[in-house]
Length: 281
Image 1 (cartoon, rainbow, N blue to C red):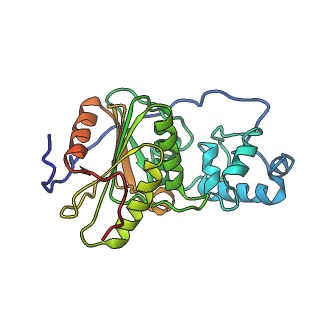
Image 2: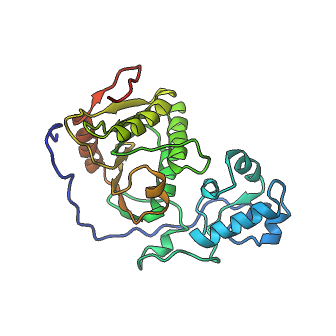
Image 3: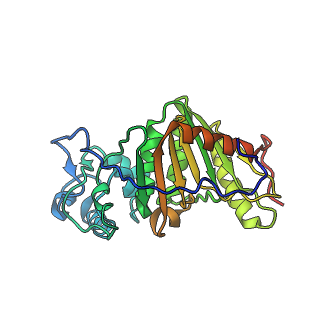
């Protein structure tokens, strides 16, 4: 086990393999594919109309094909209630058409593929690829989710991606998954403390365990371990900018031994916080 209060660089890694994903699962003939539908086709659907059809078209053009309908909430003007209504008529099949943002060779084909891996696989998650991959793994987690973040910044905006992560974590906890979140508590940055405690309050409302490190140390890791098998390791903090706009790079590693090592690392650097959260000094 790695000592909790020692300043160490987490497992420098050199990786050489990139997993190729397969084909999406079920296809519904009675639903429009949001990645290939024309503006006129979208306009003809209930709850969409010409304005939202244009928003979807522009968002698709700017960001590339949608991997999951939940990504629509990142489009300005489409909120959770609207998305819930539109789900009856839409599906995201990862269409071949439309503009796809530039990406390094070897990564483009992953943008529209489902998340699959076998023991030993390593998947590169560049930039905005991280967000849908994280959501998919949270939704399929069966036993445990352990998450460490330097910054976990949520807002009340319907387009805020970290807020969507919170919702998925709460849903996982509701179905019996043990969820633990480990956050940084700074000895000098009051704004950071307020940000992390704001998110902690949202998380603890659903019974999720939340822990902070000591103000005397800095926990700068960005780690997620699920089911003692899958590890997300890299540069992505849980901020809207990191999940949407920034040039970030993380890895998803399917390796039980690594997952156990990272879980032990997280447990060693934190301390439980009180049931009643206090404001950062």
